Amino acid sequence: MKIVFLGTGEIGLPSLKAIYDSPDHDLISVFTQPDKPFGRKGELKPSEIKKFALTKNIPIYQPHKIREQEPVNQLSQGNPDVLVVVAYGQILPKAVLEIPKIACINLHASLLPSYRGASPIQAAILNGDKQTGLTSMYIGEGLDDGDILKSKDLIINQDETAGSLHDRLASLGPELIIESLNLLSTGQAPREQQDHDKATHVSKLSRSDGEIDWNKSAESIERKVRAFDPWPGTFTYFPDGTLVKIFPPTSIEKNHDCEPGVILSTQSDNVTVSCGEGAISFSSMQPAGRKKMSLSSYMAGKNIEPGAFLGIKK
Image (cartoon, rainbow, N blue to C red; front, side, top):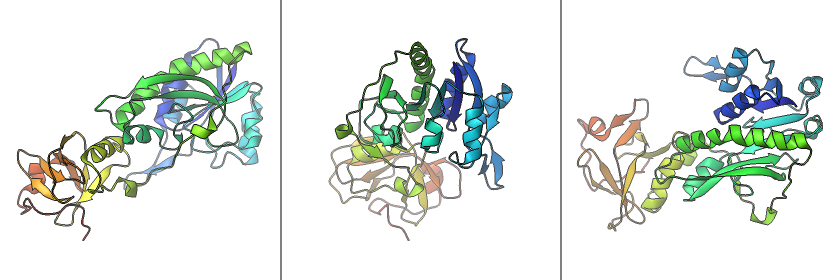
């Protein structure tokens, strides 16, 4: 079958490679988001999807808006059988959905109908789920509400971060996408309607979402630190007013009942902070404008004692 791949996020790269390597399918073009400014100099950085396509001389298109007539025409040129979408970053209009002969399918990083939307990986960890997965679905006009073609389950590890779970889900992509394409080629691919009454939705995250609320339980904060690593990161304000990012691993201590946000100790290169329920300890941090460092490096020359509060912006 003739395939057009639409993707930008790195989670789609293993699936793209699998389609390219498949003897049963012809990858005719790749659509990805325009290069974005990166770093202080604002140099344009291509997606990993584009980098791979360049190495294989696959035709690349980078429209700013996929719904405009020119990219719609470009998509139509190759007369594709299937459009495969993985973390593309734009919603496909009806004019695009009607282009392929067989189907438009998407790989979504959850077991639908759970966590429709932009941040399913973070949501699964944040909510303490034991399991997640990757779903191959037919794209409809709504957000992640199309019929399910196939899915693969994955157990979430106790120390899982969004970064590690992202990579593990990405590794499920090649097998799932090739199985899905092979089913579509037979004309007998399954279609299971989602139970819309059980659907949950998650929105795009921003940096401000990472601020730690010390009134939450230690278990909730520990999950948030993992769920938001590496993006958007979690942060708090130290007693001197410095914004400090917090990194995993963290550890939970249950037998504390001090006021939330109080520093209980700064021993053994760990700071222990009281939460709404229990306490949490961490040692790896990054003050604003500086590199990642240990607690002892940050505390050198500072007079921050137990009893001081975190989370107060000055």
